[in-house]
Length: 538
Image (cartoon, rainbow, N blue to C red; front, side, top):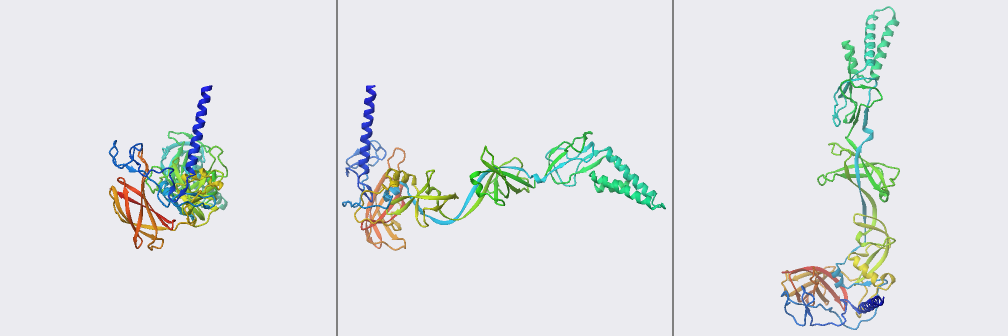
């Protein structure tokens, strides 16, 4: 027990010491180039491959023979800092740190938003195009022509023949009525001739009602001979999906379904749409389906023609029916399809979706105020789609929001208490303005391709209108991120003006690499612009 108490006490002491140490470091004065080190040592060199090896003079690493790199020390105006209030709730991120974390920002702007809804669907029959074949009389199947499931038939093609005693009896009545009319044609009794015509009409109508075709009735009338088996023809074109008509005298009656024929020239796709997406679905809406194994671009287009009035309690989805033309019968029943629907959401104030931080209860973005200041702000997101989020309140068109590295900024802002108005840097350089930095552009005139070691660098600095910027203080910094055990590397240099907006100087490229390059332009100690590019050393 005593040992346990000693261990706990030691842990608490170490935690308190670490807290005090990091608190001390965080309270260091902030300059435009970042926090000032507590005890700089200008003569300290280290090996990028073996960061634990240090030396007080330049040379090569005794382990891997790699050239030693001088420890990077912040540069800039070391004048006594003057306390100044930052914008409300803002945090300060120096341009060098912005490059380090890869921060990017874009302006909010109005645009047309479309939401893409994806779902899984299954192909089914168009129930309005299903035909069930029955006989109108009882009898015996003689011959079957549509003799397997899946066979395609056309309207008017024979399906089977049937022998029915009732049909044969009606045929006999029809032929007797025809003979009676012939015999009574010259009769003096007009009623006898009329009676024969009535018998013929009654027998003919009975044959029609039993689905005997007009062609067969005319053939019966012409030949005067009874047909033992009557052929039944398909009333529609389609595919046989069920059959119960077989050869060899199978007995059938009107209640028995002999064939089911489906017209597959149009099919239904039943899509499962989540309830959250239902507000964006409407009748007549265009839709596309794709087969997972089909070639790219082989999409079928249809329209929504039915939305189920109930929700599946297990999947929390609603079934939406989409009708498609199917000329080549490529869409086969029971196939699974990828369904895509697009809903137009009108003109909205848009920002990239990755610019919005969602806590679940609220959403916020980080506003780039310029000059290194980032301010969190609560917003209201109305909807999202096409990698864009629509902002209904909290943001104005033209304001810049952070779209890359905002997770890092979010962590930094919460550590600094930005939401509690505690994110202001304690000090700033004397006379540093709080206005947004103007845009600048940089042309790298020299080197086009650098070599390892010291290189002459020559830049042309221009403003947003393309005019040269004279009388500025220009700093260039190179950065290579950490790779494996190799520590990140940086190199900095201050350039001098040589006229017409051209600034020159010397900078070291520690090794072969494509270096992320940041050019910071100041005037009277204030940052007026930051430009980023890359320079490759070989």
